[in-house]
Image (cartoon, rainbow, N blue to C red):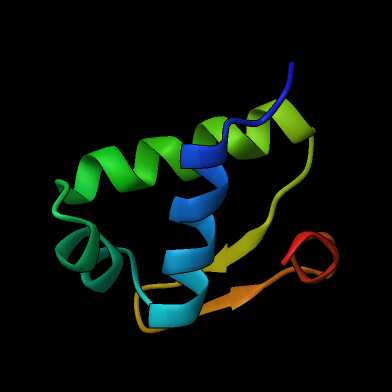
Length: 67
């Protein structure tokens, strides 16, 4: 499956803002919608793009390549 431009834009926004909630606010979307879009993108690509912890967000090696 191919990634959509919206999924890619959301991924970029999450990385640039450093959080799902800030990206959601900037994009005018719900946190859950942003999280789902990134998860869907990861499923389509077959890789994990982000390391998620309760305190921070960072790119995986694969995420670095796509970003």
